[in-house]
Image (cartoon, rainbow, N blue to C red; front, side):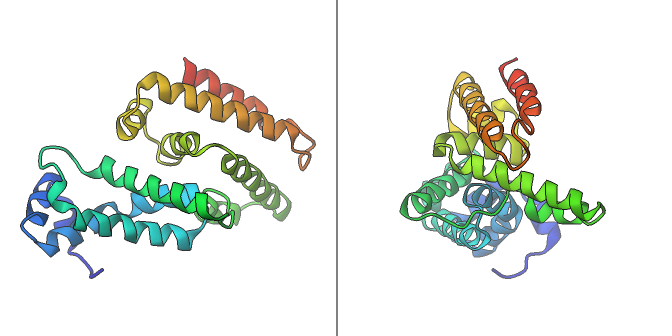
Amino acid sequence: MPDVDSEDVGRTSVLELVRRMQADDLDAFEVLFARYRTAIFRTAYGLTGDPQAAEEILQDTFQRAWQRRMTLHTDVSPVPWLHRVALNLCYSRLGRRRLPSEPIGEGHSQARDAAVEPAERAERQELRRIVRDGIATLPPKHQSVVVLYYLHGMSLQETAELLELRLGTVKSRLHYALRTLRVELERDRRFGGAYGAATLEAEEAEVLG
């Protein structure tokens, strides 16, 4: 995609972009892509753990947005729809083949890890690998709430609205995911077992509270 003026990216409302896209304005589509590409990439990467697959899902998601631009509502943000398309594409890929597993947050944490001792850095990387492996074992519907709530930092209500679920359903899926991850951590012997279990118990209490 061509570079887009930074002022255009920030100043035009998303609904105006949709209206312009429906008038076959390719510039508006490029602004939409520049504005939301990072969020969609993070959703795809959070589920696949594969940057190449995430990039392909990103491109496919926005290709569908352009192809189906006439069906988009001009009074509702298309962002939740973009996330749902990306999630569905992730599920299709995960169903076809096992993707390489790279820990969530690995790229974002390298700078922080560089400042700590090698032994501690190795331990942090191993812990992220354990957590990523645990997330990969969850059913897709539980993976999606974990990615949106923890990776994107969305609220429970925002996660529910994006996935078109009831708030109680999101809470129950997060509860299931955290309970499953706690069991995996307690079972894992790379840190002598029970590593991080107390943290997950606290997260469970917060979600259910």
